[in-house]
Length: 157
Image 1 (cartoon, rainbow, N blue to C red):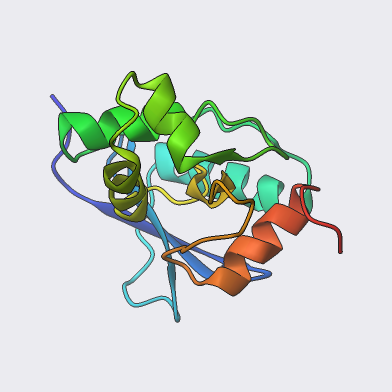
Image 2: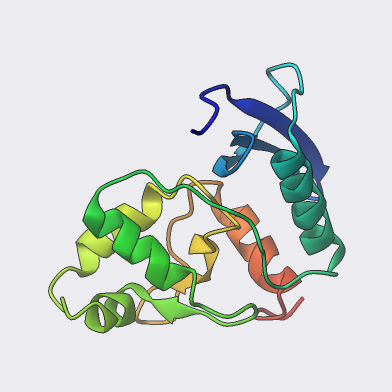
């Protein structure tokens, strides 16, 4: 049985503080915060997540290997699973995700689901762009999306 206690860890990244929330066995959330707002209380799983995210920011990690628990609706989880297939340093569009799901008319719903991603970076929603090639919304701020895509080598510095 999963321990219902949430554990909190913080990492100061080049683009601000990252808060990671998990249980003893899985990661539930990763988001940007202004500053740590809770006492850090980690588990081995959360320590592993902090280590892997730190490696990502140092440029030493392209793929995460963490047990994730994704809430949301079936549709949102389906979108997030497709987003997780976007390789490091690449992008795709909302339309291509909708098409790959066999639901080509759900582009806006794909965008809305992407916007509710509770595991930013781990579920790399920053890799989804508009069909015209323009960068579109990002919950962590467009400047962070640009930084992440530059960090991954997609955008020129």
